[in-house]
Image 1 (cartoon, rainbow, N blue to C red):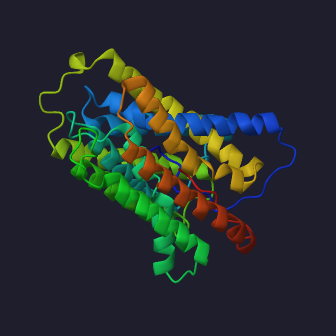
Image 2 (cartoon, helix red, strand yellow; image 1 turned 45 degrees about the vertical axis):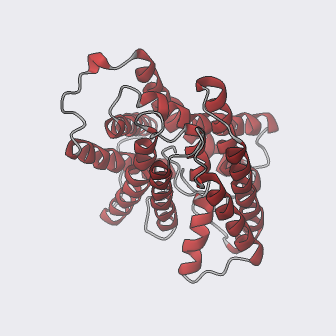
Image 3 (tube, rainbow, N blue to C red; image 1 turned 90 degrees about the vertical axis):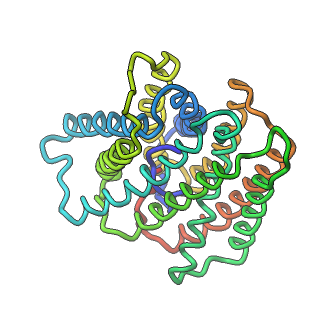
Length: 331
């Protein structure tokens, strides 16, 4: 899971016809590949880095870089927000990054048989659009029947994915439940971000979300004793490289490409990242670190992705008509 951006699927935006198709597809490929690869990056980073400490460092560094860029490009008042906006952004950041991303990082850490493979984590996180639909329903919204069909299909896939089989490729149940808890936290943050008084600029909101998430992760990491006996000299170059990749590729480059897409491409096209990212994550995990791809993973993952695709395809046209000037989503 990445920083960012906050909602599971974008809530709608006006497209800009002057954008070149080549630029749109380049940005879309960046979001597909970079966000899909962050799950593998997390797994490699936590091989020798404390999990929550590494996540805190990632978001603190990315937030600082983004804040400096905004300050240089827009001047002294670039990051100015009122107290309500600051509090809202901080609360959403804790839910998204400390709760959502932090629990995924924890689930991917640990020994073989305990840690959740990166591809499986991505498939479980793909349920976020389904959880957001449930939250909308509880708040009084009435999604169409096909949306509920997609939600049902997606959760059937989730059950198939984590169903105990007793084989060597079985998904660790505790780790899977940890990822699902992270997906719930991310979904709540996504849901609230469209209903709270947030900073109007998504880049400014992301700066405060990253700082708040990093601070919460750091406090929890210290409470867990992650820094007790930790020595940076014992961290492998492979883990340092993965952390740097997460900071730059996942939290800065892909997010910038995503926000640009929200303003230059049809929302139905941008929303496809929700079901392409898991496929990229599974493929990279299998090719680069030999993560097992069993028939159960393929079946459960395919059903989840089909459910998410159905939700995205039925929700986008309806909400694009209903919302004249929606706030862009931030992953």
